[in-house]
Image (cartoon, rainbow, N blue to C red; front, side, top):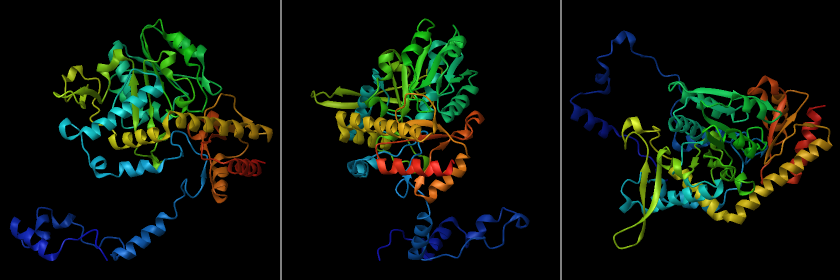
Length: 447
């Protein structure tokens, strides 16, 4: 049997103790009074052989419920999508998964080009001029956008719709608290932003208006109407968006958005129990020098050959601290590569067809649930929508698990006004049979 891990031997221990001049490991703790030392045996299992340990861990792992064991109708920010096989093949190459920050372009052309391609693809999807090399996730990208807006406009009021993902709003509040930026939340009208209430809070002190498209409840906001409300106020228009949806619906850039952010998890990145993900950040050209993180640019070497370099970095480690707009120190290069490979493998037509399937499946399920008497909340959907049930969503989801389904998100966790409301996600992977069976089962549990 080949060993993947060689443990420390007694000889190794003895040699190390000799080097530091002691006779036993216990001597390392002589400075700690005996009265406070833990002398009892640890309450852990006895050691096992590698074979026994792997078997035990496999048994535990097989108890997990995943999108591979169950048909998932859970979204709310993390989605079950098709991932081309080539994605894992490329990101498993050692020159990518071991790569670090590409400060030396002469030895990092592959990594730099991969990031440049990611930036280009994000710009094409969002309709924006420039994009950075990625962010940690969609939530931090959203908060960074608001902080950038406050710094750029020299204003301290950020307006955010309650239809933005509740976790992104919490991240935003964490970011803005220490900078004394006021966060004003705008209520909903059904499942979209209440435009009258939004209009009432926009004033000359507003740094940015922030919305999500499609929003957290799965509905499409009227970006054109929102942009018209702020165009005379010199505030920035920030839109958080699912990039897959932009393969089908009109991108925020065409509605005059100043900054578009989001999470690229939908392209080639598994759910992975909640992370890691890959945020994206795109903007108009006028904000290029204030983007957080780093940008990769295309250039030429002295022989005229195409090359790639780190072009702009607006963080405090590279420029004057008082000029920095962010302290983001890195990017999600490997996950950005996965997203790039996925988008490239799908191609422009593939991304469109994938997005179209999401909307078609969702429309089919919404109509079927209405036919079966369910109360489906109004709203134009991409791949999520809200349904009100008579019974507890927690109870319904527990029963669905026994039938091989991962149910939708319980919106009662977010707001008491949405008690017994389920946010259902329907991606291109869901079949007609799965959708019909799901509706049948929830109908039985909701009687």
